[in-house]
Amino acid sequence: MYGDIVGFAMSTPGWVHALAEFGTDAGLLVFAALFTLAIWRARAAPDRDLALTFAGPVAVAAAYALSEAVKLLIREERPCRGGIATIAACPPVGDWSFPSNHSVIAAASAGALVLVWRRLAWLVLPLAAMMAFSRVFVGVHYPHDVAVGYLFGVLMAPLLALLTVGAFIPVVRRAREKSPWFRPAEPRSPAR
Image 1 (tube, helix red, strand yellow):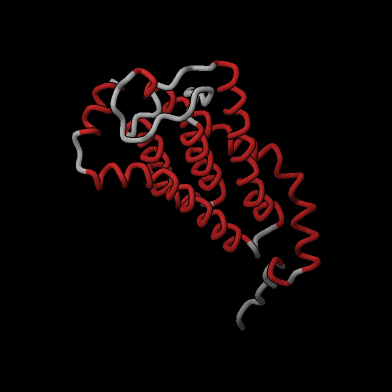
Image 2: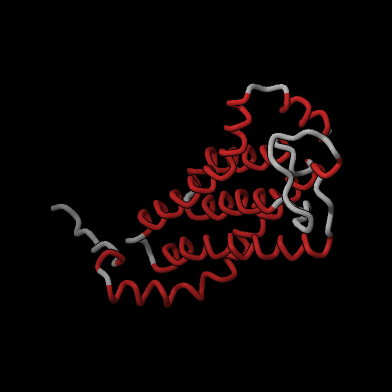
């Protein structure tokens, strides 16, 4: 399957190659912007809700670190080292293939965002899947690298965010004491 995907990728126009290489990293910037927007939306929400938006990016970083540890244990060679022509340059020896860290980060970001802003699911889950697939398309990962990376990220980040949200509540409370930007909205009195 890897060979078929990469063979097809190589037959596409150069602008598709550039889009595939650029798209993975650009997608990560989209996720960063969405996390910022999620924090903005939750700034007047209850303490736990705002804390969960802060826990999300930390959970993404933790999911990445865990996936990096798995990579060091498994040490699967990159498929691009097999002499096949690929769109992207093959990462250096010692940069292992399984699981795909890009897939983990993209899916972890999507999972953490869905946890705090469910209406984004239609956007972020397919975006993360496209970003994951692009890693096979450009030739630097096997399909199972990205599939496992996606599942790992989309499950691990929300779990880690939920497990650590309590640690972020004091941070939220301190931020609310120091900055009016983070204070909850005043309850509205009923109209008479």
